[in-house]
Amino acid sequence: TQSTRPQRILSAVQKNATRGDPRSVIRAIDQFCSQKEWAMNVGNEKGCILDSVVSEVNPATVLELGTYCGYSTVRIASLLPPYAKFITLEFNPDFAAVARQVIAWAGLEDKVQLVEGASSDWIPKIKEQFGIKTFDLVFLDHWKEHYLSDTKLMEECGLLRKGSVLLADNVICPGAPDYVEYVRSSPRYKSHYFRSHLEYTKAEDGLEKSVFLE
Ligand SMILES: C[C@H](C[C@H]1O[C@@H](n2cnc3c(N)ncnc32)[C@H](O)[C@@H]1O)NC(=O)c1cc(-c2ccc(F)cc2)cc(O)c1O
Ligand SMILES: [Mg+2]
Image (cartoon, rainbow, N blue to C red; front, side, top):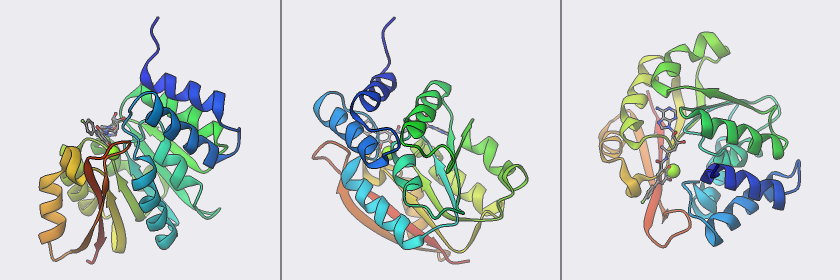
């Protein structure tokens, strides 16, 4: 049977990356997606911006919405302090299965909790299920139409505290116009746009960093 693109990404990691070396896993995926097949990983250019925000926040608690193959999961987990708690939510079981293996190849399976299911189902349960009070950092990279509703849900569930940082991928392409309008106009957020490019292309895209002020 035909392999899927995530399975081909996993094969490229297992062939070209060194077990236990997160940077080699990132490099293997970026080389595969630049030279062989485009895929919707955050990529290296936006990935470096992600790295700088993670390092600046130095979060004890992180939530990622939309794991896909685990590329950004590996970037984030490789920068976390040892005590950090990191939850990543993935809706698609096939993508989750690949992501688990990519995260394991990087040797980061003990740093990340990959939870299968929809963000809107899981966000209300996180406090009780994982013993997390609030998130220091949230990386939004799932369905772009859910960025805003899930942000409001996180607010309602008390998962954000004064200073929590939201970092959203794909502000331009595919775009999340209602989310961007909200975080830029709301007095409860201080937002900044990091201009970049859509992964592996010359098209414009960027990340929106929003600090919760409430
Ligand atoms: C949405 C995907 C990323 C993943 O998110 C999971 N997901 C979804 N909804 C939920 C949920 N509610 N809860 C948990 N997980 C969830 C899914 O299964 C994917 O694995 N990302 C994108 O579609 C995406 C697309 C593009 C893109 C850009 C230009 C083009 F011409 C074509 C595509 C670029 C990007 O950088 C993306 O990130
Ligand atoms: Mg994305």
